[in-house]
Length: 215
Ligand SMILES: CC(C)(COP(=O)(O)OP(=O)(O)OC[C@H]1O[C@@H](n2cnc3c(N)ncnc32)[C@H](O)[C@@H]1OP(=O)(O)O)[C@@H](O)C(=O)NCCC(=O)NCCS
Image (cartoon, rainbow, N blue to C red; front, side):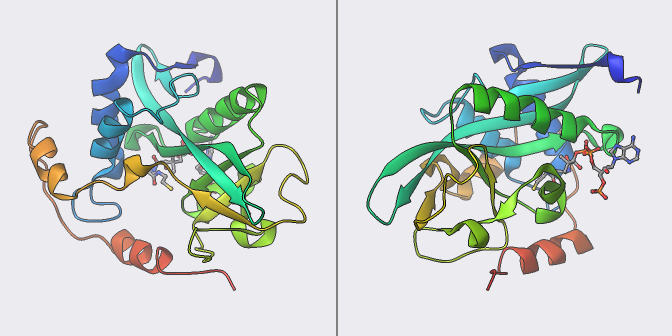
C-alpha cells in the first residue's frame, strides 16, 4: 500500500453495515469461537454514548479496511468529581491489511480529534501489546482503577493533558452499552454470511489476559 492511497475520514451512516462486516472479519475466532464485536458496534451505533464525531474509517481505493469506534466514558475522582473521557473500541483492520500501519494511523488521527475536543484522556480496555507504543500506560501507574478498585492489565490510559490524573485516585466507567445480553449476539449474527466457529490459541491467551491484574 502506498501511504497516499490511505484515506482516514469520519464514519457516515452508510458505513455502518460495511464497518460491522469488517469488524466481524477482523475479530472472528480471535478472542472466542465466533465473535461479538460486530454486535457491540451495532449497539454502539444506536446508543446515546456513541461519539460519531470521533468515529473514523480507513479507506483504500473506496474500500473500508479499518475502523475505530468511540464512545463516551467517564472517570470519577475519590472526591466525587466526574469528568468525561473518550474510549475507543472496537478498533480493527481487515486481516488482509494488517501490519501496514493502518491501525496506527487510525489511532493517531483520532487522538488529535479527541485532543481538539478537549478531553483530558483516552481510556480503553485492550491488549497492552497493541497500545504501549502509542503512549498508553497501565491504569495502575496513573491511579485509575475500575469502579471496584481493581487494576486489570487491559485498563489503559493515554493522558492528553500531562499530569491530569496526578494526586488523586480515579475510577473508570465505560458506557453501559458494553453490558449487553450475550444471547443477542447469535440472533444478530444470523444476518451475516455463515462462518465456521472454532478454537484458536489466541483465545487461550485472551482468557489469561482478561483475568490478569497489575500489582
Ligand atoms: C490490532 C489491530 C487493530 C492493529 O492494526 P494494524 O493495522 O495491524 O496495526 P499497525 O500496522 O499499525 O501495527 C501492527 C504491527 O505491525 C507493525 N507494522 C506497521 N507497519 C508495518 C509495515 N509497513 N511493515 C511491517 N510491520 C509493520 C507495527 O510495528 C506493529 O508491530 P507489533 O504488533 O509488533 O507492535 C489489527 O491487528 C486488528 O484489527 N486485529 C484484530 C482485532 C483486534 O485485536 N483489535 C484490537 C483489540 S484490543
